[in-house]
Length: 166
Image (tube, rainbow, N blue to C red):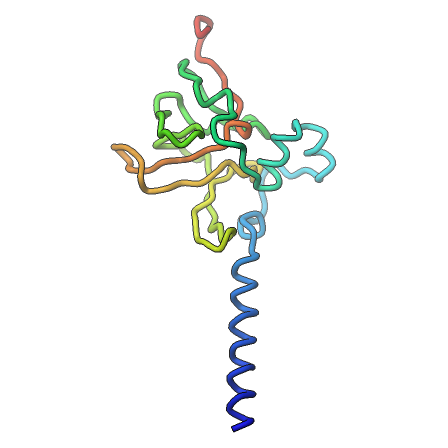
């Protein structure tokens, strides 16, 4: 009887350890190396505090707080960390979530990792060049892709199209 309890406790402990390791793996650990890599001090010096928290620490802005939420001019939304073009204004739409939303990124702009934070499994999207955390992608978006890239606006920089884009 004691051996059975010992075996059950041991198995439960191993399962708990495996579950803890699975839950604490961060998207940055899963993503690997990037073209642009800087020290933490370099990122802090380059980015505003809110940008740093989002791009480097996987933070999230308050819903409705980004000025880019209501940005409707034609142009490109780029990574605030490395200026890589990520989304065209042509794919931006109002999802009603409080974050800038897009149904499709530009080619070769994003990387994806599993995000296991908050005890759930989601798909995190990051800049493929610098690894900056941008947000998440969900499968409840509009046609033609059916995807909703829910992006932290403070992780983006908007570049208006052409000289008359004011």
